[in-house]
Image 1: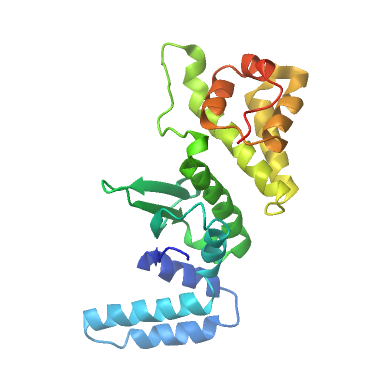
Image 2: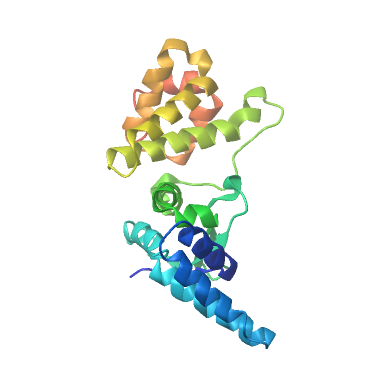
Length: 243
């Protein structure tokens, strides 16, 4: 059973506005929207707008993308009690986070731009990636820790976070591409990023990339080791730790 999905009203309104732009339904939507302005009482008018946008949000199927992505991972998300979907103002703010209450109850917060949510393909790409990150974090065998062991005194550690995020992203995209849920070009973009970040690996960069992208999923400690000293970590094992 899908955990309850709760959408921020501002996101709902802006996503409907974006989704109806340049579509045949736009005239009907704007006609209904104008009718809501006729409410003189501010509270009644606000309620009218909320009901209007909730109705159009459902009519346009804007809940279906998130529902379908969550449905792909139901067993892994069994401990998540609710999903809050809020508005992101910029692309860099888009993503998903897990919050754990004192009682251990987990809430998943998804931040997404209205324009992304209105574009099914863009929303699928973002949400599928973010859900794999969440599933990894929830898997005890991944051994996830929210804070990386960064030592400012160690020069290599200053780049640890960037390398860690890139390596984890390569693993996530690799799994999605192999499952047919992301286009191959997404992984090629990751390859370019990897070669730039690990240029000193030289001719071995492609081989190391393929181990992460096409091999078994590395766990959190393995990703940290690869981020800190990729030359040593790649040479000590022919494959990342399989889980």
